[in-house]
Image (cartoon, rainbow, N blue to C red):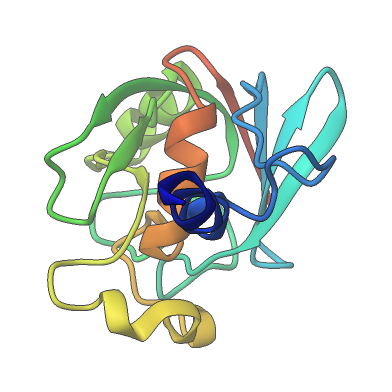
Length: 167
């Protein structure tokens, strides 16, 4: 009799995707493509888009980042060069901005290129905002997604992953 009672409980606790083709995947990606004009971030593996997310950017998203404090999200090709599980924005993936071209451009202009560009979730106490976070560009130049989304991205993105940020 115990078996008849235990089995339905176990089945009730089994995730719906077990045994189906809709199981969540933690497929590692080799490229991230951010399209600033579309406010999207796509994860790619071998040229195939795995998933696309809507994002928030810096408050002045049009054009490339030129200097510290300009409120712009950079444009160019970078890599994820570190991961921060203790980020104040619920997990963060550090983007290697500024690259050599960004530094040279800033030096020629006599300005600080800035840095600390990341793909991250929401700050403490703001998880409730969820998808509403993308209704306006609010970061200091970073690329923001919801906390649930950064957890998905975090599981798939490793240090060294290429990040292409397009206009």
